[in-house]
Length: 238
Length: 250
Ligand SMILES: Nc1nc2c(ncn2[C@@H]2O[C@H](COP(=O)(O)OP(=O)(O)OP(=O)(O)O)[C@@H](O)[C@H]2O)c(=O)[nH]1
Ligand SMILES: [Mg+2]
Image (cartoon, rainbow over all chains, first blue to last red; front, side, top):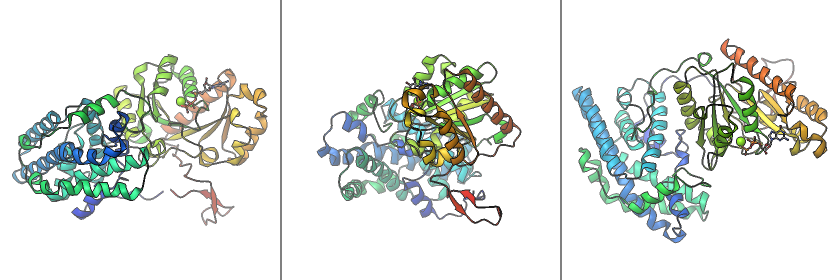
């Protein structure tokens, strides 16, 4: 058994970003397929996976990325002004704005469980991080991503790419479990998906207002996730 | 959306000995893990405050089975869905299980023991010591008399090895005594218990084992052990001059 390490301080921002993007990150994330299993189980064809991932990126993933960016910006600002009050308000408003853009209760539930898992890990890594202690009990995952980015000094654009990548990579990994094919193809899908929203990265990264978080929702996708929550014989929670 | 109220994870966790004993139950599919938990609940729910967490790949079937067994307040039995990675959820990424353990311990504080059933995966799945304080590995006689001898991390080094369903032994041509002797040898003397839910004496031995581990846990004398990810092997070790020292690489 190794000695308990004492501090995670001093990691470069990019290193933290890499860690967050790593599917091996022990924060409970392996139960998500980014909605792909719900889609396949609902009868979406294998030949539509590519399209699915592209739609997912510019809807749910950008909504998540926008919420994360707003949180990052707001918490960094509040840190400079020492305004604890306003950051609490920002957190609430952002959670609400994100929830309003994520109509499926099941999708929100899983995001909140994943957020809690990530926050648990983050507070163990950085027990003294004031930013993380403001987050309350079960913030959704994008909110925690934004807060970790603020704490680790991750750039806004890096954060947006990270959220989009994380979502796509989870879908690709799930695809390899659910309907295995050439693994290289799955990775091509990930890169292609990320590239497809590259022209949106700067704009989403610059967001500061919860009301400006992208609000394109893929209603069919949310409906599949909602339905999936009530099925059995599934390998993923969502 | 915070749909469930939870304590801030920043709050310092109590020392292990001051919280419930977390007891893992692992073993191959169908060997009787849920039934063993039901037996423990039946035998101890009068004197101990218990909670149960089940890990299922697909559904909440184990939790439903235990709830319907009526051995514990259904609220105290909580399912976790491990998805495609039941192994991961009890070993390399225990996040969901730890959160569930913390939740149930808080919601029904104080609890004495939280029993955690693994999602029956395979012969090699064992719990991380970061999740459970002690673990029981369950085999059954129907799996054949040779299984115990063949070994594996759970069989070799779980805190207790249960050879279950001994009532079936005559029907499957297994010599229970031999199986227990083989297991004891494979385990280098660690505890082995021949169990059948229909044999009261064996259930009370199980009850006694749980109470003994709980007492050691409370006294701060019980140190969680990792059965290891793979078969044991020996290293010459200066700290253990009288022979090799069994360990596994975590
Ligand atoms: N004869 C006999 N059958 C038992 C005993 N214990 C359990 N069983 C039976 O074995 C079967 C499996 O029992 P469970 O307790 O569901 O086993 P499990 O290990 O929890 O199964 P999974 O969670 O599916 O891996 C059931 O049909 C039980 O009734 C026993 O002591 N004797
Ligand atoms: Mg079971």
